[in-house]
Length: 621
Image 1 (spheres, rainbow, N blue to C red):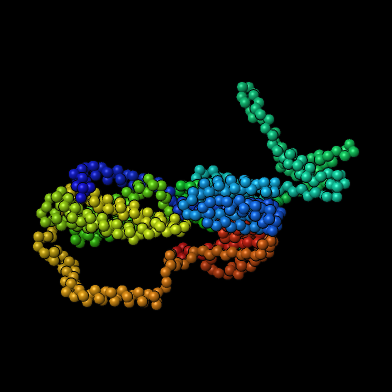
Image 2 (image 1 turned 60 degrees about the vertical axis):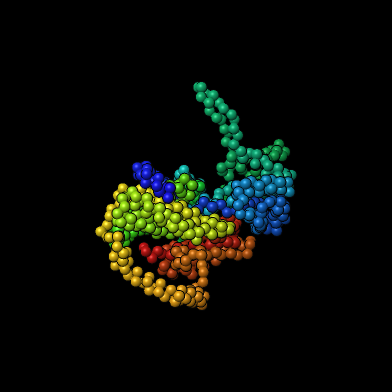
């Protein structure tokens, strides 16, 4: 084969390439971003529109119907669904596969802008976003508990939030389970009527006063200083002294017509861990960032020794642990595969020649890591699974080629000629064998929808790794063998049966099979039919993923829309009490006001929803 001939002719260049490949492979492996989920954006756009204090029926008539009419004008759309609840409407626009999600988001925003004239003027700005499995699902989640004072937990969580968001790769640290402070104005309608003051005039006046004004630049000693006049209200007393109108030459203050209190917004969510009041923080990463590295940096900020006294921290989710376990499994397979290949081939080819075959594993993977780095493929769970799957196949090509070169060299050919002829004789069978293996996985490339985007990483990774192993077998192995291969003590000039007892035994079996080939083919066919029938009768069916013992369980509580959060909380507490006696539970995280699908854009944040995340004790701990 031409490529092999050139590799042997310019073997010095091949040795230099091997040295470069070692450096690039190690660097690529260390710099490839580690993450739990692949960087996949689902072809859906979510629109969340909030209009506080509005019943579901009014949300449908005032907002859902006008917006849906405009959204129906979009092209390449598979389905459009809308869900109206108290004060909110959620639209899910599912596009056909292959649509650019960023473009789709912009088109949805354009349609909502066109619907604006038909919507209430005081409507909150609609939130339009997509969902990326890499950046929109948290890589880490932890809960703060131990102090019954929710305000103290909240202040600690906000401090940690600021610290964590200062890490360059963190996109957001989101707090849940707290109550937001608000200054509430409750008007006395009889007094408004008595003073003849329109309610909306007072609302407009308060909004006008609640601003910070920029007064431009002031030059002092050749230095320019920006001047701002702060006017935003921070205390309830600031609002009480606002002059609303003049009546009978006397000012009417806001406190005369309203009750102003410094309080909290209506309770919308609660969190508990093992029955204790808790505040949870979810951490989201930026695209292309290394999850393992980010989580390690986050752990430096959430060190329990640095927390205020009495506050405990519980790690609810940590993607870095699973990623590290998969990486350890991959590295273990590489090392064990390398040594097992050498041990097996030592019997037939000697330690030096078996080492040439064993080198196919590290060099194939180093080349694969380099290509993956250039293609922007991250080291996610699916890629790691494919790498572990492919490690065992990396030596197949090398075994065939090195063994043939070894045989020809033992028959008397020089190292160079044996390498050239040995590789040429089996090059096409080796290449064809690799292609047939890839053909078995190639249908996964055409799997539709989101599952296809996930599973597509398996054939892509195998194509890279097995093609790399073919390159190593046709280029690196012959070049190395042309210089370093060594004759063994076996005599290949005589019959192959003199080579090894294993070969003699195999020959006897093969001769017997060829003498009774008709019977063998018939038996094989009957065995195939019988196996299919037995599996059809006694088999357990087909499943995409293996059934394993779960490490955690999620429970969702759902009441009719409009149910008060206190009732939802009672139901969640009842479940907490029912499972409190189970010994194998590590912790129970309860979220009231939030369902299980909140992270997936399903709009599952409402007072009638609750969820429990139950983590079991790890058997290995």
